[in-house]
Length: 364
Ligand code: NAD
Image (cartoon, rainbow, N blue to C red):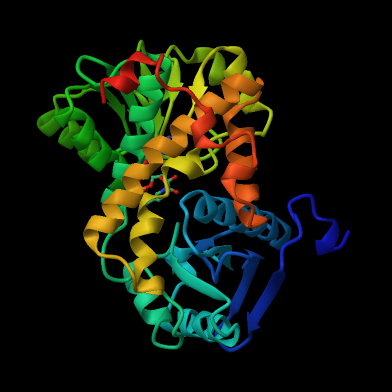
């Protein structure tokens, strides 16, 4: 099998295999699309079991970045990088510098940032050898949380016909950078929180500041909640967990929540409204990308993040009208953008959609 036949290849524009013998670097940079602008996406460092696993991961992640940027209305393409290795053992300045030189050689076709296994300080080190780093000044997590909140608000309006969170029960899985900020927003909005995390300190914080009820990690799926919000891991919506869900909405920050593509249909079959992850978790990218685009102040940024509400609503309405899953509709919207189509060209045009009968929406 060649890279071109890979099941995740999806016509990537460029896939670069990077090797630096002195630094011990093995990395892959995947550029899915630059149709809308330079490809942007984080650099993940992970002890992959094989180079094949790393390739699969980077191809999947870079395509998701194309879709995320397109739906967020950003003039950016999709790309991602992976460094093969254990960040706790193998990460050092020499390695990061070597990676920075690889990105520099791409001449701005790909911009890199932090991701799992790399942090702000690592990106700053990469930036010593590379002009194309972003997300180095402000933490993206509060902006990601705000976007998730907006996407969840749209789901609550559509599915529950509610214009506010007062008294709604939200089960939050993962109380890290995003989950903690999301809990803050939900608590302020009057939601009751049921939370879990494998980190006891994160759980204690949520109990103390958000009056949250806590459950064991394995018990979060079956909680009697209105909304389930995955903010920890990918792949958590699968054949085992979906039957356990009592919530009628899934809306969270975690990337790649669907175990497999078909699980979008499994959720729909159970009348659970799924807010596509890359649609509602784009707030951090919107914030960080200001370092590439140099064109937005805070007010414009917040406006763009709040637009996640109307985009999510459009996806929900269209999915219902056409008997499709929300994941399919979100992909179609992103692809239309990538093909440089106008949304107005399609049946997805906003003016064709009638929100007036949705009680929660008129109340907003
Ligand atoms: P984080 O590492 O700060 O937080 C993740 C939290 O999940 C941690 O507190 C961890 O202890 C907890 N966790 C891990 N395994 C768990 C389990 N089995 N059960 C319960 N909790 C568990 O990460 P983050 O920045 O908050 O991001 C959360 C998710 O959102 C990730 O999937 C990330 O890829 C995605 N995301 C984050 C951003 C961002 O701006 N940080 C943007 C887009 C998407």
